[in-house]
Length: 201
Image (spheres, rainbow, N blue to C red):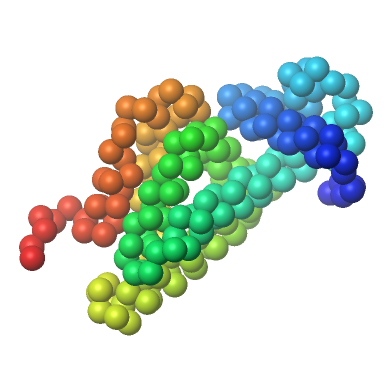
């Protein structure tokens, strides 16, 4: 992995490489995208690319790590002022869907990464972190009696799986296509917390 102390200009250029790569990987896939494609889109030579990244694989891995980190930061920011565990789960779901709605190319990036052995471990690790975060709130809800007793890890996997399936199903790589399901976050919250049963007071 290339590690250099970057100037402000260098940091901006590196971010541009990542932004272009995200669009290209989402549109063309991993094998369909070359280092040359990234450089041509940016209008720079390959020397610029290799100043920041050792290879296309290193670029993809770093991009995936940064996207997963951004997702977790978005989730944490959404719940940091929320006291009740169920409300934290709700806001975490809404924040996650909002994150993918704003940047649907990340959905394609994660989907692509999961298909390749060299990247799937990063996806799995990211999922484990999210599940552990959710499980913390589930356990707290169980302790206070607002969430039924059960296996908190299984419940957390269920929440994560539901949210990402909703996102994969309804969000494409084009931000314009995400506008057709404005109620998606509320449906995801309702399904994760209540299932399909009618509410009984």
